[in-house]
Amino acid sequence: MTASRVRGVIRRSPRADRVYRAGVGVVGGATVALGVVLMPLPGPGTLISLGGLAILGTEFRGAAKVNVGAKRVVNRAVEIVRARRQRRSRQ
View 1 (spheres, rainbow, N blue to C red):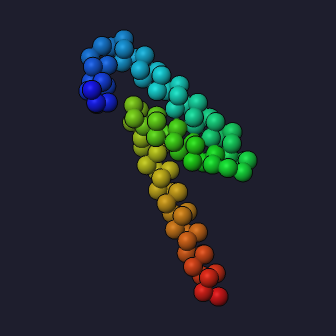
View 2: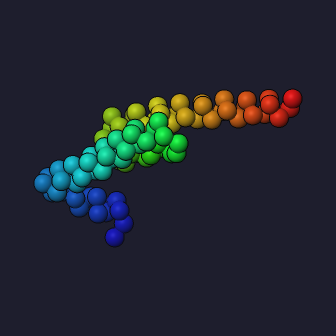
């Protein structure tokens, strides 16, 4: 059984759907919170937070929209860093 079929079965039952969405909310929220706590430390805190947003985005439209905006910001930052590295390597 594929994940989409399982999710369809869960959606048919309002109680199971609420429990599933609550579980996704708890796991995604905890992942975002862990990433925020780890941000000032060396390591992948930002990536962990983005992963948590992706988890939340599977069930919550607001989180999906925030995740799209966050990805845009990250991609722009990566472009800036690459451009700076290229300029430095040419000098």
